Image (tube, rainbow, N blue to C red; front, top):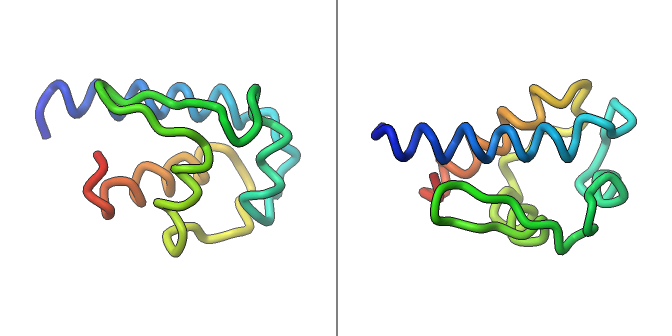
Length: 89
């Protein structure tokens, strides 16, 4: 993994954590996270030169999530892993 890739992942991890840490855990579905997002499903997240809306992330991560999530760290870890698996990171 290059430095740029590592930086992009760290940037995305930080944004996701900040947006989702206030959720009422355990979280049982993607839809229960929408109210936590500053702009709802149109909230944007950045990873280097890539930008993902919350809706795009939900679509990309379908099948990679393992609800329920008991904490933000586990949720963000799975988002990052799912994006890697999809070749997006």
